[in-house]
Image (cartoon, rainbow, N blue to C red; front, side):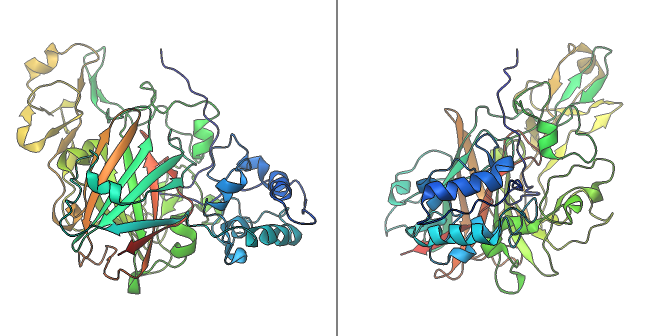
Length: 470
């Protein structure tokens, strides 16, 4: 029996459609008076934002965050309170899923800004990359803990909005003269590797399992699809893989305007929300679904996209990018998301007479992939001898090539969560990549977790900041 877990409704943005905070309610102004204590601030937020940011909402920002959590969340900026996302989101100055919140009045904003100004400076958004000392062994990209990671301090970032078990990701960074190294860990109650296998049916035919069953109703959002009770590991509903994505702003002529303050939310566009952040599905006309794309020609966001079944055995992430795109038929499936030069290194197991064409060295699963160099043609006799319900892997992999293969990575699942180690050259020279060529610069990024999900990811709505320390 599948265990059904209580899962709050989530109003998320996408990565391929990530958003900022969802809309607050319209309960009227409740500006705190006198002293601006946290209790008065929380009362204002509760009145103005509880409709969508209650403790059970699944959002990154929730009205039940205590003072310490809020101070270190990145939502407030004590050195410049007017630039706090807690104030900019409800006014839609920064991308906000619900647009302007009318109940969040000028007096509300002034009172909360006064409280923010009195808070200690926060380094919650910053990830300090520590330089490896001379003679120190760098981390090995294998998912095991290396002594070198003890030299660095981790930063924990809140995530939410999708259907992942994780509510945060923990990130650590090191560097040397050639490479940036990152270690990312997050909670997950299952290792999801059953990516859309071929399955033999009772009448002897074969079917590729869809990623989700049933498909969402055309035009519905993720939240409407998920409902109030949700188990992302339910094998009767989902057949996909775990993934992770890291998106970086690029600099110089390809800088994505707004990314430094709004994060990857600035690349999310939903036509049902006036091209603001949103999560609308549309299976009949993909040009009308929410998409990722930058806002002006020449803007490029670098995206490192790890896919468990397709990438992990090759110790790579898929080096991709988000570029400018004009909504329409061309490229409607992916919007502005594309890949760097090189081969993907994976393909579906094709059909021959309605049945899978190949298997691996054996027909056993898992794994739900096999290497292209080891594929074996299935014979009619072999296919007819399989029992009803037999699964055949549907991914044939060889690993990415060219500049698409520049990001080394390996994820290891253990004890209820993932640990991923990443290595990439500081400078690649590729126009689609962030270049870590100025170690005095702050580099802005965001992380998204896909828990057995195609696009319904949990995400950081706040921009994280990588700083290189001597």
